[in-house]
Length: 152
DNA sequence: GCCAACGTTGGC
DNA sequence: GCCAACGTTGGC
Image (cartoon, rainbow, N blue to C red; front, side):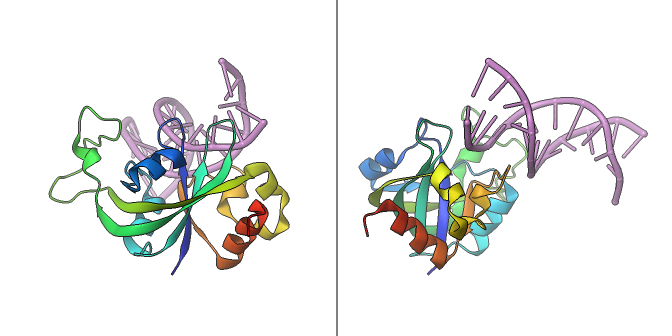
């Protein structure tokens, strides 16, 4: 079982939305590096940290679990939607998504605290200018972040 | 709203 | 294949 961190803007889709829906597809990833991780590495049962970006309280806010592995992201074929990609071929879809299921909220672990923690220095998230919306998390980093919530 | 950093595009 | 221009991300 592997660990991941998924970024989301809570104004669009938050941990609360996920809790309401229980299971949600993770559509709209339009970055090749992130896509390749979903395609090749993200497996059923993997654990996911949910991270809120571009908002007041930036940081890790909860946990989810992968409940469906990569399949075509149909939003790429919706010309009215925000994730439309006119260059994607329906017979060979360019973009994929996975489904995740809500597990629990966590007490916020802010980006500020994560940046200040030497144990997390190697996370892409805390490195300057990183824009990956999906990134791997090591077991040590996972444990450290859970510790930082003060809940465990 | 600003702007630095990054990925993508397209001319050559 | 280079690289400048452009658009987007995302913290602040």
